[in-house]
Image 1 (cartoon, rainbow, N blue to C red):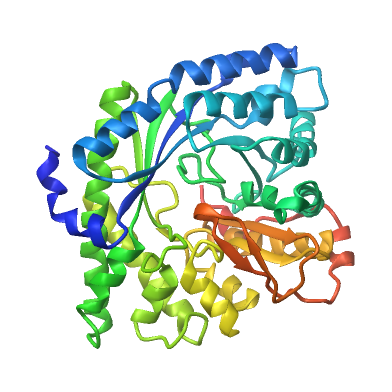
Image 2 (spheres, one colour):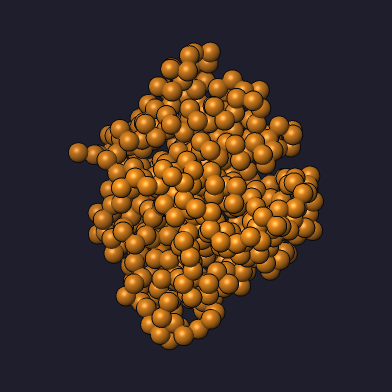
Length: 452
């Protein structure tokens, strides 16, 4: 039986090593909100979210006070809106986007995710309407996050969707140009998206989920970094064991919070996602963990191997602490949100190519990366295609959250503030991929997709 004694040993981690619950995310099914009239559909969505999430922030704050555990974000994820709005007689889904934004503000949460579409094999009419509504929605709302899944190992890569998303990202950047293209920070393009991810911007409430469910995301790069200082010079076996033990303790804390939130909100407990999600704060960096392993700077040779060890050990430790570890559990490498990554980019050791190699072994993919504002839509699509290929071939989730910063060139800096941090604008290849992207169609699924 879990109780408060399970987490008392983490007090010093909370006080000195940036350990926190990064988010408790309430997933809500919206299937019963469908209606042919889009305004009626939007009203039903608003009403249901406000009813189901009415006490989410209050309960999160109660748990934070009682247990002394910081809960940084309270969030909501919903059924992909392309599914819910399919019967609406409207081409513009931004009306629903505004209903999501209004409900999130009413409930007092930090973000709401699920302005989403799953198009790995093809498009419905609703999918296309939603995708075309993304730029307007993200530029005119504050808390709405959007995701599009363009590939799976089973289906291959929908290159028509990849081409479209390059243009959608460009348009979203243009519409939020006065804020350095920040709308793109709320937009993720996935391969093999998971249905129970509590982290933004990619969270949505999947088809296989309950009516409502609580998913918790725990983070602790600072804790792992501090633990590795005690085993400096030891073998990789000792290194991996230290990370596993630390991950166990962190996940145990998440399990306690998840059960408490589940009981108080009277909704099922879903998963604990143990993802080492960094922040711009000093001492809360995944890059610094890799450097503590013995690398002079993140991005040098050996970085991918170090990240592979870290990601695997985190997952092994987490699954021992909870029977329901899910989401993306592992290590995130968002550039703007990790002060060590920013430093490595500024030193010239961490490039876009090296980040792509690292995504073969991390939890997600190319995350919170600023690129020159004049980067073409074709080039952005090609970056998405490369990342999707890594996910499809390796049967893992990968993603691209990339920000063409209007008016900025390589070497400049963009400032987003808060947890989104600041990002150095990274160089991209100047050679064109236009003819490749223009082919259209679908890159077939790999042979190992035939497993049943």
